[in-house]
Length: 108
Image (tube, rainbow, N blue to C red; front, side):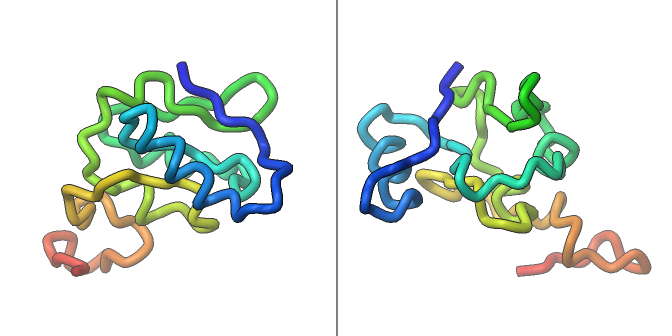
């Protein structure tokens, strides 16, 4: 399990986490300084990779199983989820932009 701690450096936390992802060859991470604990990522991940911890924060239990569909990243209201590479458009799971009348419409 990969858990990132809050960043106390002078650098932007997102750029630090992006470097962390590349160096460890991980696909996805959560920036704890941006996560508000809303749980939308856990609800929307089609593979159930995001889980709530006992302290109310969220973590990616098995980041190597991420298919980079971008569903969690596209729907995070605070942009706390950082992906090394986005392979999918995430439209099948884009809860914020999909119309209730037309569930087949792509949001790209």
